[in-house]
Image (cartoon, rainbow, N blue to C red; front, side, top):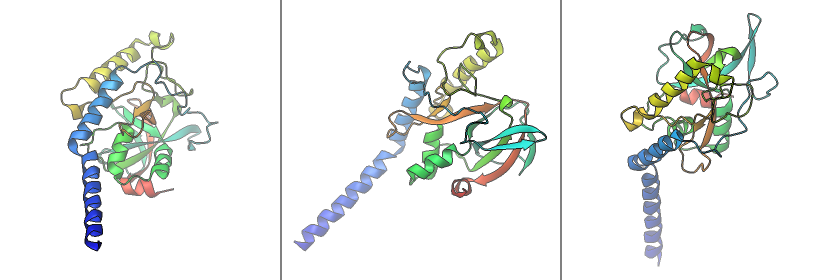
Length: 243
C-alpha cells in the first residue's frame, strides 16, 4: 500500500513537471507569439480599451517632476543594454524613437501576479519575442508634449485610441506615413521573432494565453530628437524590487 502511494505521488510529480515544461516549451511560445502578431494586424472593432492611462497632472497614478520650470512625467523602457544612456542626466534621443510605458504600471502589475518566470512574463506583457535578451530598465523624465500614443489617434490625454485616423490626425501626413511604415516594420519583417504584435490601440499585446483580453500595458513613444532626463538605470531584478 505504501509503495503504491509513493509510486502514485511520483507519477503526479512527473506529470506535473511535464505539463509545466510543455506549457512554456519553444513550440508553444512560437505558436502563441505568432498568433499575437497575426491578431494584431487586424484589430477587431471591439478591442479598444477605454481605460488607457491619460498623461495628465490630475492622474494620481503618474509620477511628475518639475525641471527648469517645466513638467516632466516618469516613463520607463526595458532595454538589452544601458550602453547608449548616461547613468543619469540629460539625454537627446537623436534620430531614434523610444517606446516606453508609464511608471509604475509594470511594477503594479507584477505585485498582483507574482510570476515565476519573470523575464518571460515581462516579454509577454510588453509584446516582445520570447528569444529577446533584455537586461535593464531605463527610467526617463519626459515632457508630455514629447510623447505620443502609437495608434491612429495619437493623443495622450484621453483614455482610448480610435481604430481609424481622426479628422485632425488625417491632416498630419507625416504621422500617417509613420503609422503605415510601422505596420510594415512590425508585421512584415522576415523571421517571426523580428516581428512584433503591435496592437495599434495604445496598449501592448500580452501574449500570455491566460490573459484572454490580451490587454497589456499602456504604451507611448518618445519622439526623435527630444531632450529627456535619465532618472536611473536598473537591472531587471533591481527595478522590480524597488518601491
